Length: 95
Image 1: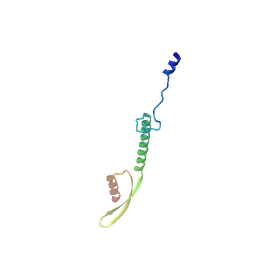
Image 2: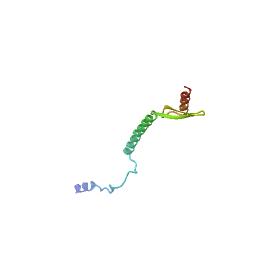
Image 3: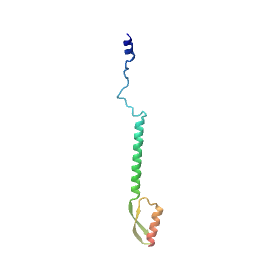
Image 4: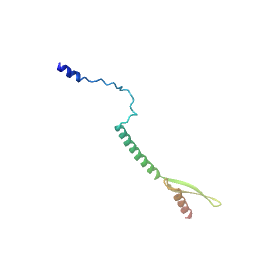
Protein backbone atom coordinates (compact mmCIF):
# COMPACT_ATOMS: atom_id res chain seq x y z
CA UNK A 1 0.00 0.00 0.00
CA UNK A 2 2.90 2.35 0.75
CA UNK A 3 4.45 1.66 -2.67
CA UNK A 4 1.24 2.59 -4.37
CA UNK A 5 1.08 5.92 -2.53
CA UNK A 6 4.69 6.70 -3.52
CA UNK A 7 3.88 5.95 -7.16
CA UNK A 8 0.87 8.26 -6.99
CA UNK A 9 3.07 11.13 -5.76
CA UNK A 10 5.52 10.78 -8.68
CA UNK A 11 2.97 11.03 -11.48
CA UNK A 12 4.39 13.20 -14.23
CA UNK A 13 1.98 15.90 -15.28
CA UNK A 14 1.32 16.22 -18.97
CA UNK A 15 2.49 19.50 -20.48
CA UNK A 16 -0.40 21.48 -21.90
CA UNK A 17 1.80 23.82 -24.01
CA UNK A 18 1.37 23.98 -27.75
CA UNK A 19 4.78 23.44 -29.43
CA UNK A 20 3.59 25.18 -32.61
CA UNK A 21 2.95 28.50 -30.89
CA UNK A 22 4.95 31.46 -32.22
CA UNK A 23 7.09 32.88 -29.42
CA UNK A 24 9.40 35.20 -31.38
CA UNK A 25 7.96 38.27 -29.66
CA UNK A 26 8.83 37.01 -26.17
CA UNK A 27 12.12 38.11 -24.57
CA UNK A 28 14.98 35.69 -25.10
CA UNK A 29 18.40 36.50 -23.66
CA UNK A 30 20.36 34.30 -26.07
CA UNK A 31 18.60 35.75 -29.11
CA UNK A 32 19.17 39.31 -27.84
CA UNK A 33 22.87 38.63 -27.31
CA UNK A 34 23.25 37.13 -30.79
CA UNK A 35 21.38 40.06 -32.36
CA UNK A 36 23.57 42.55 -30.49
CA UNK A 37 26.73 40.79 -31.70
CA UNK A 38 25.38 40.81 -35.25
CA UNK A 39 24.60 44.55 -34.98
CA UNK A 40 28.12 45.28 -33.74
CA UNK A 41 29.63 43.25 -36.58
CA UNK A 42 27.49 45.07 -39.17
CA UNK A 43 28.38 48.43 -37.61
CA UNK A 44 32.11 47.69 -37.88
CA UNK A 45 31.71 46.54 -41.50
CA UNK A 46 29.65 49.63 -42.39
CA UNK A 47 32.16 52.02 -40.78
CA UNK A 48 35.03 50.32 -42.63
CA UNK A 49 33.13 50.63 -45.92
CA UNK A 50 32.44 54.31 -45.23
CA UNK A 51 36.13 54.93 -44.51
CA UNK A 52 37.12 53.16 -47.75
CA UNK A 53 34.59 55.26 -49.67
CA UNK A 54 35.86 58.52 -48.18
CA UNK A 55 39.42 57.69 -49.17
CA UNK A 56 38.61 57.12 -52.85
CA UNK A 57 39.99 59.69 -55.27
CA UNK A 58 37.75 61.66 -57.61
CA UNK A 59 38.56 63.77 -60.62
CA UNK A 60 36.38 66.90 -60.54
CA UNK A 61 36.11 68.96 -63.71
CA UNK A 62 35.33 72.63 -63.12
CA UNK A 63 35.03 75.72 -65.23
CA UNK A 64 36.44 79.12 -64.29
CA UNK A 65 34.83 82.09 -66.05
CA UNK A 66 36.66 85.40 -66.51
CA UNK A 67 35.19 86.44 -69.81
CA UNK A 68 36.15 83.18 -71.41
CA UNK A 69 35.71 79.67 -70.03
CA UNK A 70 38.62 77.76 -68.56
CA UNK A 71 37.92 74.05 -68.07
CA UNK A 72 40.22 72.34 -65.64
CA UNK A 73 40.18 69.24 -63.54
CA UNK A 74 41.50 68.49 -60.07
CA UNK A 75 42.02 65.28 -58.10
CA UNK A 76 40.41 65.18 -54.65
CA UNK A 77 39.22 62.56 -52.19
CA UNK A 78 35.54 61.94 -51.46
CA UNK A 79 35.82 63.14 -47.86
CA UNK A 80 37.12 66.60 -48.83
CA UNK A 81 34.99 69.51 -47.64
CA UNK A 82 33.82 72.19 -50.05
CA UNK A 83 36.12 74.75 -48.41
CA UNK A 84 39.19 72.55 -48.91
CA UNK A 85 38.11 71.81 -52.48
CA UNK A 86 37.75 75.53 -53.27
CA UNK A 87 41.14 76.25 -51.70
CA UNK A 88 42.79 73.59 -53.89
CA UNK A 89 41.01 75.08 -56.95
CA UNK A 90 42.38 78.53 -56.06
CA UNK A 91 45.87 77.06 -55.73
CA UNK A 92 45.60 75.33 -59.13
CA UNK A 93 44.37 78.55 -60.76
CA UNK A 94 47.23 80.56 -59.26
CA UNK A 95 49.81 78.24 -60.79
